[in-house]
Length: 158
Image (tube, rainbow, N blue to C red):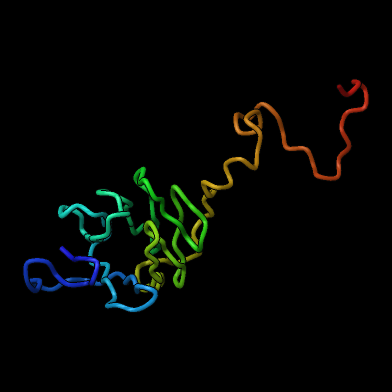
């Protein structure tokens, strides 16, 4: 297990570990290596990466490596997870992105090509884009009206 300073809890690791990237604390500190393809970040000692800060939730967020790209998923934390300053529930992390866990910021560092990425991933709709469509559009009951289209003039507006 790794703590927030990047130190191995319980001594040095035994055996060889693959490194899938790292989180570099902004403002200084040792990088935190990403040693597994799924990592739980939180304040609890059972987390893969323990962040010993009172504003970090016990199980704050999860990092997962999918097709050569890291993704972050907030696990219902109290103080949120942000990518490049925007609060997210789930988001792909690009190399160089800033990941904020509560108010603690880390630069995400990895190379997708070395992790098996062969092409740019299909775009996922960001959680913060959820409200860009109406419920009827989301349900497939109404098509999106072009921005330059005028409202239907047959019915009077109220």
